[in-house]
Figure 1: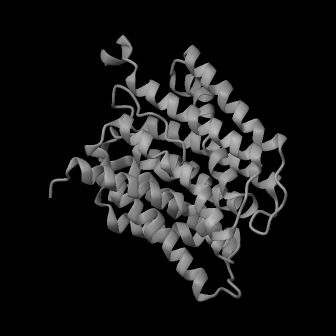
Figure 2: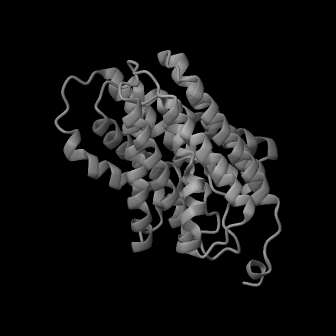
Figure 3: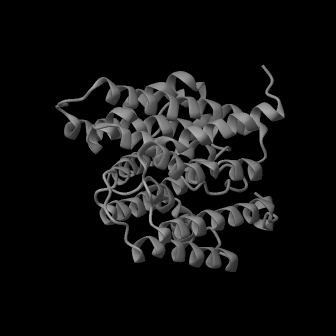
Length: 314
């Protein structure tokens, strides 16, 4: 069934909105961080595998290597969300392009431009805002500093995942722009053969499920609401979101898709405020705005700039 231009964009927006609810939903469960991380990923792996045919490709050693780093990102993001505000967790994970630019030249031979260096400086400035203006502990964010540190590490592991996805999809002339958050893994390498990016999503969730399971068991005192949250996170927030995302991406230009997907970090703090009354500090808002606006500017520049001669000659 053909997908219209409007339908494709609505699906992309729906995916971003679903992704953005993750932080608030994670906080809604009384389960431990390990339990949420494990059960969420277990349900998500099954949901994506069932809902998205492209995710059923065979797991190669390369896919498993990238999936291991992606699994670390998934777990770190859940733990960070349980300790700091949802806004801080998503904004600090959104520093991933900074780490990609730092590591890309050494690992993939990617050239860093002066604009890239300027972008790195702006993102670093935004990141500093989270640690200069320390958030006061809240019921939903009892350890802001510890959570912020874990969120930064999740940005590093997400950057490693991005580089790994580029490695998997090196058949194309140029990689897609860096997505800022880990929920959007399947958009990184549209050239990856056999749906390697989506296969990595399934494999990474399976690894996260298995790695956290020993710490997640036994489960004591979990109520119906907790299991409904887990099902929502796995089936809706990840499964249905990836179904919408994978069906929309072939019909939306990369620039527009990258911009629309920034709805996720923009909406994420709002859901946490509406559901839990969570209020990040003023400096956290400033830092988040700096990071997201820098990401928008870099995304537009990366997609609009011409390919270097070496890339077009491959």
